[in-house]
Image (spheres, rainbow, N blue to C red):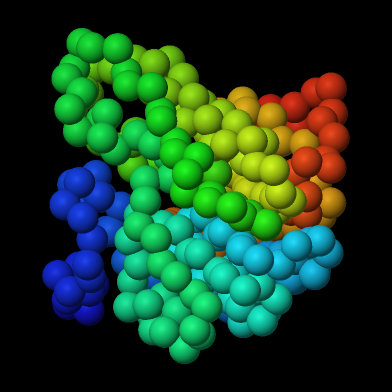
Length: 276
C-alpha cells in the first residue's frame, strides 16, 4: 500500500483525471500485474504478437498512435519504435515506467488525453440532468498511419460509471448501462473514422467459474458488437484467490488485426450469455 500511495503522490496527472479515479486504477493494474504476471503472460504475449504482425503490414510507417497505452504490458514498444518514425502513446496519464521506456527511444512521445471524451462533461454534470454526450477528440489521432486500441474498449466506461454511482446513486441500471454502451460505441466510431489500419484488441465476454461449472457470464461491452476476430483467446484475469478463494474470473478476448477489413456477423456473439 505504501508503494501505491507514493506512486499516486509522485505521478504527474491532471486533477480532473485524479478526481475520476483514473490514476488510482492505473496504479492498481500495475500492482495486480505483479501479483498475476504468470497468469496474464499468455494474454499479453498474444496481444504483442498480433500487434507486431499487423504493424509489419502497414503501407506507411510515419506515425503509430497507441490509445490507452497504460504501462505498455501488452504493447510491443520496441518493435513499433523500430518500424515507425514516430510513436505516440496516448493515455489519461503515464506512470514512471512508461515514461522511462519512452525516454530510451528518441521517437516516442507521450500524450495525456481523455480518450473517452467524458471527463469534462461528467465533472460539471448534476444529478437529474441528461447524461453528457461523450466527446472523443479525433485530433488525438493526428496524421496516424497505424492505430492500436488494446485492452481499452471495455475499460472506458468503468471510471465514468463509478463517478455516476457516487454522484447519483439512484440512477437506474438502465441509464447506467445505456451510458456505458454509448461510451463504447463512440470509441468504436472513432476507430472507424481512422483513415489508416486499426488494430483492436478487446474482451467481449466475462466468465466467472468454479471447479465444476460456469457461475456467471456477462457482456463487458454492453451489447456493442465487435466484428469477427482474426484470433480469439482466454485471459485469466483473476484466478483464485485474487477475487475469491473458490472462483476464477476469465475473459474471452478478440484480436482484430485490421478493423477496416473485418466483417460483422448477423448475431452479436458477446450477447450469447446463457451458461451451459
